[in-house]
Length: 250
Image 1: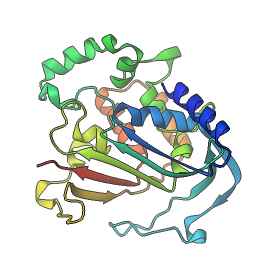
Image 2: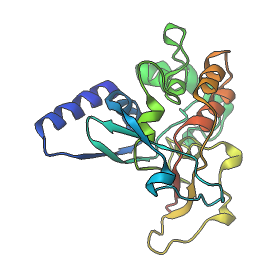
Image 3: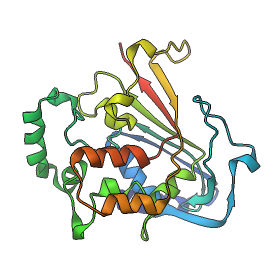
């Protein structure tokens, strides 16, 4: 699906020469598809600008100074602006209450994992069961740049990246996988905020920037087999993090 989306974007851009900027707004599985597509569409310029030099660097809510630099890259030859996902299973759907409809039942989660083949190739990828040519599952490959596709660089070149997640009433995509968090990272309800302008947004979090080198990431992912919990941890550590908003429909 990511390949087809990339081809469609290229076709549209070719017929609209006046286009200068591009954004992606994706829902559910479409968010993962879009993340793959932008890696296919990404081209990198030699020039790099650091946030301190461009005036774009901000201090995170935690007080940690932003160390991230922006790559002067383009998506389909256009300036990337926004990359936004709604209720997207960034961490996949395997175990750990990632699918609320299964009500946290370990037995039901095992059954869902075993029959994930019903959803074809996509099902295998969401349940981290694809190991084509001995490679790690695709969702894990998408947390770093490789020779063929630069997944992280493509994300980093967008000026704004936001992941919206549902706190409740989403029975297909859990709060953790859509907000790219582990269980201890989920905000406590007593810390929910009130936003008069956007009443459904109950929590907003600026992301901390990971500083591990690409080589360390690759080695940790491909050097040894991982349990599901470890694979989820790798995904949490290295997937795109810029801003996360949690939604409630109470």
